View 1 (tube, rainbow, N blue to C red):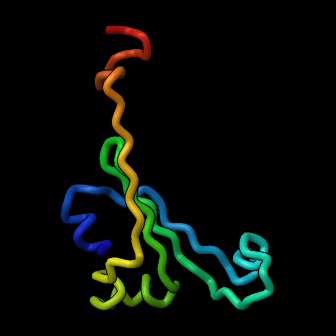
View 2 (view 1 turned 30 degrees about the vertical axis):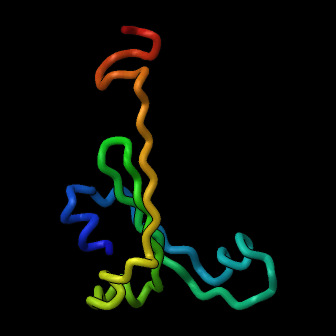
Length: 90
């Protein structure tokens, strides 16, 4: 899915790797959570975040890049604010 998001015009804004120790701090359930890579993509007010194992990001295998369960998208639209205008202006 990362490939189709990039093909749709999204740009990769950040790639962050959380280590095993950082994952344990974020998810302190005691269950093993391996390191994860989070890829943040953006197109205007729309944001997508994809997560995968570091090895998958480094190897860019088709199975991982096309996996639709790896990405979450959010759109933010506002009818009150036009592009390029200040909030409160009409």
